[in-house]
Length: 405
Image (cartoon, rainbow, N blue to C red; front, side, top):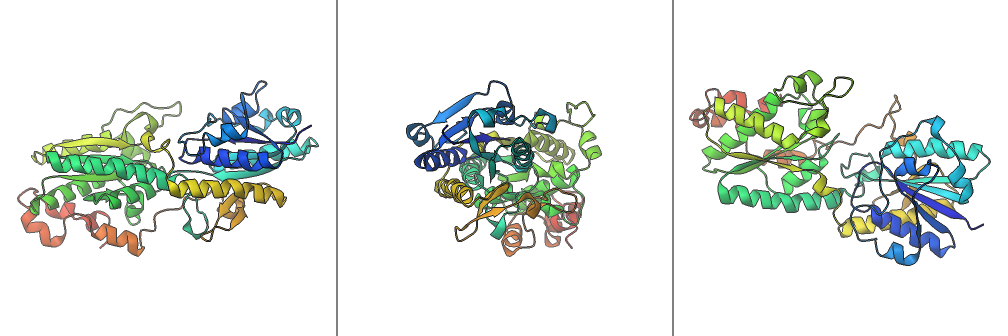
């Protein structure tokens, strides 16, 4: 019976998934393997009648430069009691390749240990993806999909800035990034936005809505002092995930709540929340300033990969074959800054509690500090001029809000 490899995708989309799938298929087909794509992630893999794709060269060749994923993705996370080896036996699977985040990888490690306990020899290699760029890869190398998502965010972001300038409005933009501010930082700095707020800025201060809104108003008033009647403030959605739950519940926003009483943040537009709270505060201050919300969310996940990610994802796909040929299993495929392929293991990333801490923006780096210094915000020297707009300018001093003095 012909040997095969199986490919499945977990979590949410990232540009470059199809490039990885295409590269894997072409590389293993050359060596005589059957290449099977599994729809619906682990739910499909462990079902009685999985929906499968059998790749030939032409099917693989059509998808390598496309966005999205030719294999339907799923966030389903099976329990150990859900495991079975039927699929692996039936198709003589020698390698399971998973594409996803750390949850997808750890589940695959558990599954392949179970499958191997059933007298089957199945290797596992994981290809990590996230547009958030928050996996601590060596050399601070980016996760695949990040540069494409940032590129698309900048394309949309420049159009928003042009609208702000054209209409003399302010826009409040929210960008994806659950645990870290890499996307927001990259987009805001590339687009010359007047204000950027990422969770890493609050390294000496608790995150509150009041602080976020005061930072935006600090930027608006500083611009007014300089005769600039427009601008864009970009806030990373990650600020929500570092906020105390009481702060969210008492914000005045109507949330839906899950069975455990937690606000369901996925059901609301973050930019609308920030813009609404900004408008409430502007009216209190009697400042007549128009602002509009824009969400940079799902638009970034399924766009066509740019050249950087096409190259990186091709390298990672070929790299899976290299590690497989070397007999390496239970690992994550990675490339260092020289392009050398190396295996990494979840234990390489885990802290003492077995969790993977996110890679954050290095807020103390020259790059971060210089970009932050270049933002528009009120300093002590602006207090007198700011009194025209604000009764207490010192409450809007950017560095004091962050406790950076």
